[in-house]
Amino acid sequence: MIIGLTGLYCAGKNRVGSLLEKRNLPVLDMDKCGHEAVRLETAAIVRSFGEAVLASDGLVDRRLLGKKVFGRPEELAILEAIVHPVINDLASAWITSQGGGLCIINAAVLHKFFVFGQLDAIIAVTAPLPLRLYRAVKRDKLRPKELFNRFLSQRNFPSYLDNTDNTNKKKSRSQLFFPSADIYIIRNSGFSGSLGALEKRIDAILEGLYNGREKGKEKITAGSCFGGGFPGDRSKRCDSCF
Image (cartoon, rainbow, N blue to C red; front, side, top):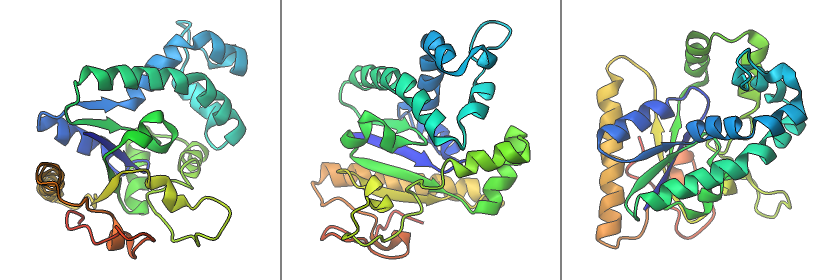
């Protein structure tokens, strides 16, 4: 079973990932795969973005590279074309190494990687925008323009899903979260004492996943957990969402 873990910038998905690891579940951090891909593809990145993205040690400075691509769709597409094939290869090898057991793929942009079509379920971490802004300023200490670009780069992120009319020729944002996977939402409020509540949410989701698999129950889909059901006969309220 392959579970995707995703969430908006500074929503807390890495905290959730660490709590899943605490429960002895293998978690692949796709950011680390991205770092390795950047290292392996340094020459190609320099050809596309110039030596200005290099640090004094000759390696790509990811912060400088980020300034080149965040909020710039064309530049981001160039970078993704370079590193995503390597990331996919690294992720594929890791999944194979797990021998078919339950494993977690932690990625902010799950829908951009090959593994998206193989997911059995998705855990999406959300948090209020003001809280995410506070966390971003405190953690990353970015300048306002850089911070804006980070948030702008996820403006079409499919966790805040809309019910776009299916007759629309353009792909609904909500459909980005509907391969064959079910969706479980964790709302990470960040209030005092919320760590215990967060752990309970995670345990409830895991119990639902294990029971659904072991007992052959129909999978639970997002349904009204997003504030309204989605098209499709399988859409129902997800009791594991909080």
